[in-house]
Image 1 (spheres, rainbow, N blue to C red):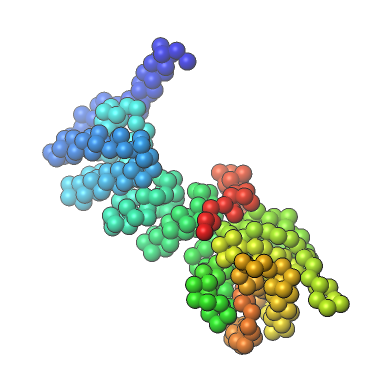
Image 2 (spheres, rainbow, N blue to C red):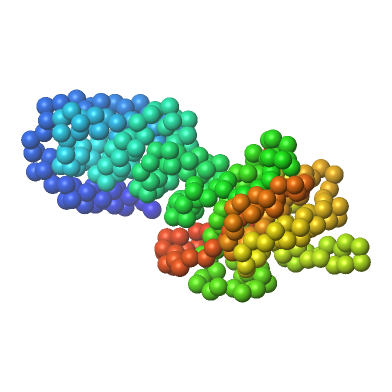
Length: 364
């Protein structure tokens, strides 16, 4: 593209922007402290622009938070309204025509962002690590600071994209993580027990199976494998799919594990058994046998003990605790559910992670 053509296009873009915010609107009465605030924001932007270019996201998010805090402060003290923010956006874009993100809408997001995160230490330590789109999703969808912070930390830890973050929020992941009933504290050393407890959730949502209500375990297995990417997403980051109906030869008998995974961070195999009926204590004995066999037949010397996850249609909390009390192998028990949900929004279609992305990044 020639320089002349580029200049013409830039000029046309500026003319269109000015048409949206007529000069007359800028001449409207403004608060007496407006020029000082405008100059302060200009100074702040000039100071940070180089760092925005070099370190990109973190510096930009901190800059947005700072601008939002300045606007929020003037709004509280001087009653700044939407028209003042519109003028501020126009003046800032005049001063920085090549800088994106200075629209009235984004300035309002900055104001909401600063109001949502009043603690600068949290913003610098956690929130600045997230891209701006993730931050907008957090402030639009969540109102409690504690819950919002949980999702922010999980998004950083698991590398959730903005669409995946929205899926996790919509499925209320914070209410399910770490809620599976287990005997991990008595069967695993403290560090491994704590980590395993946080890996498993209750209930597991198999919305991607549709409205059907499978009657047989094999039907569930087949459906989960057919939707393996969504299933891995529901299980959480770190699960690598090994196989379905994996053979374990014990004595002169053959046993088949419903689903076998390897967890890259726990460094162990995970045997998943599926039931279409309520929890029965006999299921624990069956799973205990599978874990012993997997430890002998599959586990390598540097692998940690195999963990079992029993997924039932429903359960009685007290019965499960009694059934697990004297079991020596680590087992977690949770429910699985399907719910009637609408189809995925257009912006989420095609945005689900690949299996490689779900298993990626678990260093150490």
